[in-house]
Amino acid sequence: MTTTQPRVISFSQRLSKWDVKFSPYLYISPFFILFAIVGVFPIVFTAVISFMDWDLVRGSGTFVGIDQYTWILQQPHFWTALRNTFSIFLLSTVPQLVLAIFIATMLDRNIRAKTFWRMSTLLPYVVAPVAVGLIFTVIFADKFGIVNTNLQAIGLDPIPWHSDPFWSHVAIATMVNYRWTGYNALILLAAMQAINRDYYEAATVDGAGAFRQFWSITLPSLRPTLIFVVITSTIGGLQIFDEPRVFDQFGRGGAGQQWLTISLYLYDIGWGQWNFGRAAAMAWILFLIIVAIGLINLLVTRTLLRTEGTRSPVEKSRRKRTQKAVAR
Image 1 (cartoon, rainbow, N blue to C red):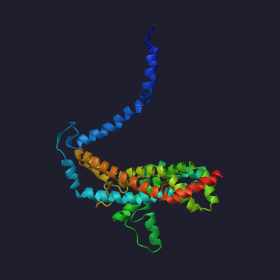
Image 2 (image 1 turned 90 degrees about the vertical axis):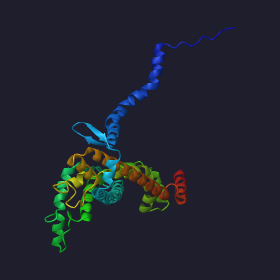
Image 3 (image 1 turned 120 degrees about the vertical axis):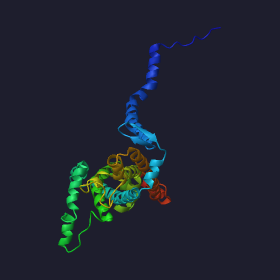
Image 4 (image 1 turned 180 degrees about the horizontal axis):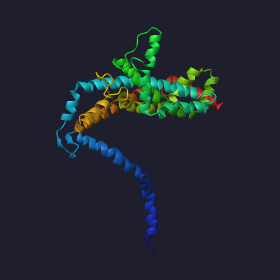
């Protein structure tokens, strides 16, 4: 009778085994370490401060519970800032995405000097927000602005850009659209370039026009990218700070808080009133609002694209016909 001797594993074999098992985690660990330092720690520290009456000089505070949150929710300026933020967000995000899809569709066509046009769309993105504010301050000045001068030249009344809440929101939304439309258009264009061209050829054979091809092929294929663009636009739109900050020389959202946003109000509480406990609570309220609106946008976008795209019976039938045409 023979007995089987246990296999002896050398140190180098054990080292090689550990290398295969743990090396991937070691290679990606710098990102998570950096993210923990500059991402997770500030979030957790802000949450702690939001429940305290924080003294920045001493670096300590007194626990006050939810008093900071209660104080903010009782302030009329908070609700004014929330209303202004949503108004500017809607006026900027919706036209911006529609225009970005239109520009991306045009750039996806076979046009002359397409590289020049594609690079030109990104030019406003590299302009500094302060420069954008100075440019549009000249355009939207109440007395001697370019827009009002031209309106008066044709006999129309000037627009009160800085005193009327709606028109001030339109002016700020225009600045946002100027900076971010080209950026989003290039992201959508990259997604359009990845769509299989056989689908368009088969649709053309079936007699589908350009609008039908866009609605039934392009738009459903852009679903993941559109969700990404909608989410990033939601985050940026609700955190808007630069454009309303430079819309006038004071940067406080107007004399009557016509364009005061949540980020401007947060900045004023923190660095204007030197109350960092309330500013931290305000930051967390803004964070929860962004998460809620982001989830709503995600559900709406997925539902719309699902209805008009891949899951509807009409679309399934169309896809089958397209695939059969490609196979032939």
